[in-house]
Image 1 (cartoon, one colour):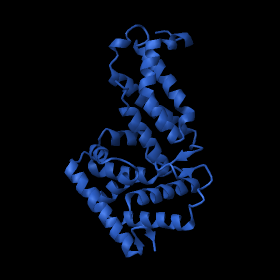
Image 2 (spheres, helix red, strand yellow):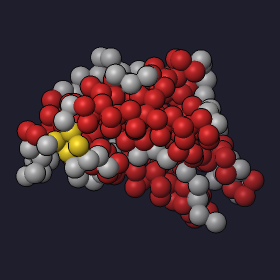
Image 3 (spheres, one colour):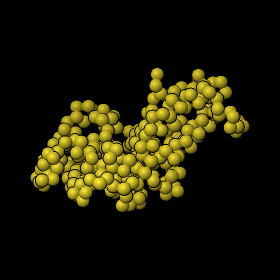
Image 4 (cartoon, chains in turn orange, cyan):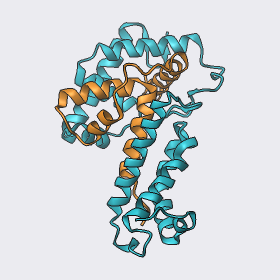
Length: 76
Length: 184
């Protein structure tokens, strides 16, 4: 199966998941996401957090915004 | 320091600096359904820069990294406020641009598509943890360089794990009857 097809199917899965529940009980705090971005903590802890973030449509969106806000560069 | 008046925040150089660094964040925020609050973030950035002295003729001395740190800090505060109010985006566009939460599902998003997504999820969960992680990041649209950077891994290690992870995933899907073009 092509990367494109895998990505689309995974995208649709997360969209369905977001539509079915907006509960955030198991989501990490924003500060924990920042620690991942700053490479703080052990590798195992960061992997655990990233595993949730990439499987949760809401956390994935928040993480992408934080990552971009922290690295956005103005054009020369 | 006194609070800034609205007119103080219209300093042209300050505006230009914030606008330039904000452009990329605005595009992303719109994609992820956060555009309704992003103006709040950049108003907060203006206020923080003004308070730091950037609005008093010292703009040229403000390092670019300070603007980015300020933007990140304001974005963190925005997300904290949204969570405190239990807000979720009204519209959440997935990276493919085809799957969107908050709109009617596309006509071709059949039950079969959803089943395929569930199968892919199950098989990713069954991979070795480091391979599962890079596969999730890869499918979320992160580049090899971004993944290596996030995980503090070398580029060869990251490339190998992506390659092996995707190969394992495809093999597992094939074993469940899902070939190169999808379900048989």
